[in-house]
Length: 470
Image (cartoon, rainbow, N blue to C red):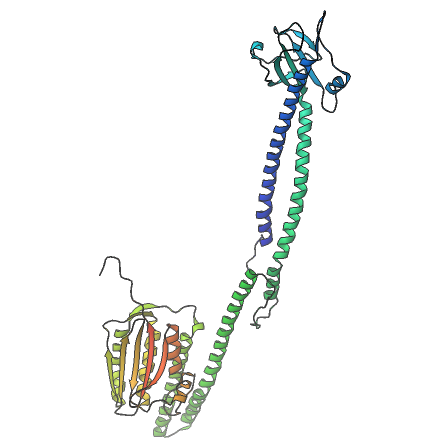
């Protein structure tokens, strides 16, 4: 019994949930990056707007430049929620004219080249990392044509904001993934339930039970599997039935000749006269010959049945040559029976594919039956014709023929129209089985003016001609 460490449900869960986890991680990272980009854009814009607002609050005093911040603005700059805003205002020479924190200048930037468009850079002030916006603006009043405004905010605020963003994105996605995983697990369990039901039906079935598996409410895929199993069960049941029938027929048919053989040998053992003993032995020989013929017929029938083998070995053969050889081999038996046996082949070559031993048995049975059952001075003709798709082989005799009501019954096993002779009633059954195994048919027709025609049709199987050859 084959076992596997992985179930179908486990494999489906792996292929459904692992890509989902990867997509979740990629989506969370992309969402975090996009949100952080827009947050940084907004914060950098705020630093620029604060610098512009400071330029409007400058006033000139004898002591220098003073930034007059309203109380609300001062509280906003020192807000702990937004993070403190640091600023430094410099004159064109770079000297600090006002600040709440001395902010460092960018390393390679010339102050004279600054414009009203802010330049953003990162800097370190003590142990704090800062994000700084620097721009040049003309104040509303005062002695300076332009001033340099620096506004900054600690990176801690940005980091805290980014953490909040990732949490606000990741937590709903994690809950969504958990809910999706539960639904996938439940859905797979529900979807695979018909397979589990089918497995239980097969596992709990008795070996003798060949009845069809019925699952009307199952999905189409499971119904297709059940139909395939039903077809297998039907084929197996038919094969077992054929075997049982063969065994029963063989036992029934062999019982009588073997019992007669035993009786003849017992009588022969009691005989004292050499002449009577010779007669008994002649009967024993006749009974043994009949038994051998019956066994051979039974074995041929068993080989020719569809369920006897997964596939009979087939080769390409020439039916015309086979029929000529069989006719030639049967001529001595025909002459001994006082019958004229002839062969008419109307094709030069009749290539087909099949089992040569079984096909020989088929045609030998037909010729032997004709020789056996027509009167002396009769005539038998073996013919081979060809049409577009089949070879037509007929064995025609001018004997008494077979009535229409018996034409079907002669193909039944052990059916004999006459109880005389050495036949066992298997010849025509073997002929039909072999013909059907080769995709052919057998038909009985009346000959004109009297007699019987046994017509066998076998499909063509012409060899493939190599390209370029005529």
